[in-house]
Amino acid sequence: MRLPEAFVAKMKKLLDEEADEFFAVYENEKINGLRVNPLKTDPGAWAKTAPFSLSPVPFCPTGFYYEPDEQPGKHPYHAAGLYYIQEPSAMAVAEALRPAPGERVLDLCAAPGGKTTQLGAMMENKGLLVANEIHPKRVKALAENVERFGLTNTVVVNETPEALAEQFPGFFDKILVDAPCSGEGMFRKDEEAASFWSPAYVEECAARQRRILESAYAMLKEGGILVYSTCTFSPEENEQTIEWLLETYEDLQLLPIAKIGGIEPGRPEWTKTNRSDLVHTARLWPHRLKGEGHFVAKLQKQRPTSPWRGRWAKSSAPKAAIRLYRQFEQEALRTERDGTFVSFGAHLTVLPERCPDLSGLKIVRAGLHLGDVKKERFEPNHALALALRTEEAKHVLDLSSASREIVQYWRGETLSTGGDRGWLLVAVDGFPFAWGKEVKGTVKNFYPKGLRLI
Image 1 (cartoon, one colour):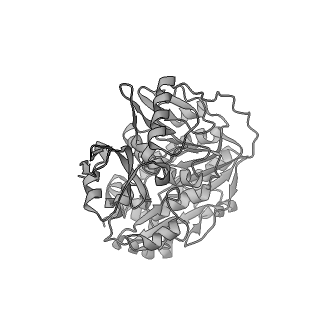
Image 2 (cartoon, rainbow, N blue to C red):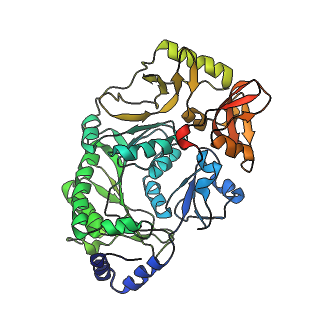
Image 3 (cartoon, rainbow, N blue to C red):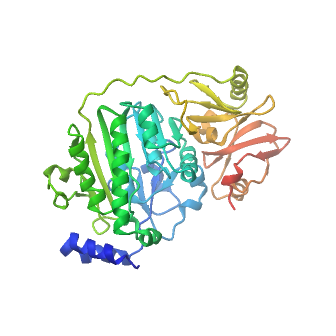
């Protein structure tokens, strides 16, 4: 592929004797990966029986490589949220943060949602995960991926980092800043990124990253962990940005990241001060491992912060809406969902546990969208289907992933069954896929129109 001349010259100077080996990878095909969803299945066991040839990613226990001729994104298992298609090196970022169930976590630059879904799965849907994306066009994909993965502890917002910092000072236990960057590490995967690149763009990105980090620092509580990552090689956006961060906030301490599976230390020699602790950062090089280029740094905040003094969200949904949902539960489910119920128009939603008041924020998705109230009846949302296990539904229509029927349903067609059970959960090989309504022998299709197979 054709690389920008200034980029080639810069990397030759930085890498010296390594340069030939580095540039040789651009003659190879990109590396493909997927990450299995532990909320829905056991990753290791499923990988052994998967309909694709998979091999493990060494630095991510739920990550696997797949062959270039495979198309897992076109399989019904993908629509059911069993896995997320993700570039393998990107999987190392959430592994560095490793949030625990019950924590308050922020993914500040979250679209399209690969790292958000990984964080949510690590949290086992417990606690609070706020996934923010500043660009309105990108936030829709983020919300769809959160829904497909079956996340119920996640609030998707469309805000600036500054607006969030004003609302949540000292609030989060852990924050991920997967910063918008010059994208040098993705040139092999995305040639458009190479055509957009320039030295001036690198400087522009570095300045923007520092503004984002200022907001992230303000939202981190004492003892909290911040992970910063990019998919670029430029020292200006990586080691030099962390150098600036450590000089600006002297209480921040770099924590080591495990150097496994070909992950290498950062390069202190590419900074002004050559500070030795920058070896704790991590670089993922495409000529050193199976994946594209990434940089990751992990820091801990030492300075005491004032306790967050905001308000917690309270149930505000109309009693009639909750009553209709309870009727639906009685008819269709074997489980009862409790929590903080709120309404957004006709949408009935249950918020994550210990969710703060979200007033004043542009909310795209808050917790779990249970369904909609329509003319004194309750219609379940697709998100609820994907958040369930099949054993939690009273009526299940389980279709084989190799069957003609699952393709028909994915396309939005009705199915003939001979039954009259009302609402039922349509599944694929035992994994929830969508809602259907069985009336007089026909299953009416409730697979969302915008997600249907074309």
